[in-house]
Image (cartoon, rainbow, N blue to C red; front, side):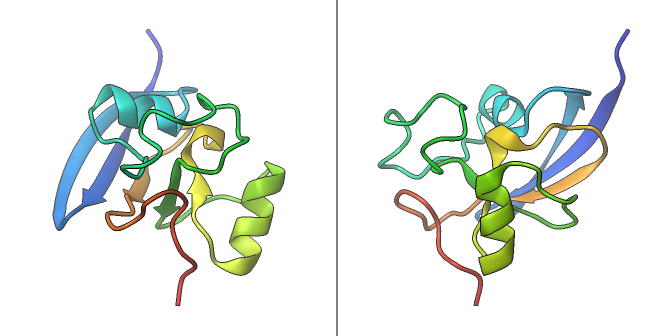
Length: 108
């Protein structure tokens, strides 16, 4: 039996607690729990989790060091992390970007 981790998702003022199997991508876990990381314009038009379109961005409360090229740039300039490039290997707190159309804005 594989290990699972607690992932707390914040969206529109509510918190949802998920139990996510270790090694699963955050994007997969969010979609399976009907907590979509996508904006309304990218819900059906995205790259399918290959790290190319940057539409599955979320904010991580205590993220690890990014290892995907896009996430390294995003962290440097305050943009969201790609949920398709985050592997669940510990407990996480995730904030969905409720007001994004496609990519999500820069942190103020």
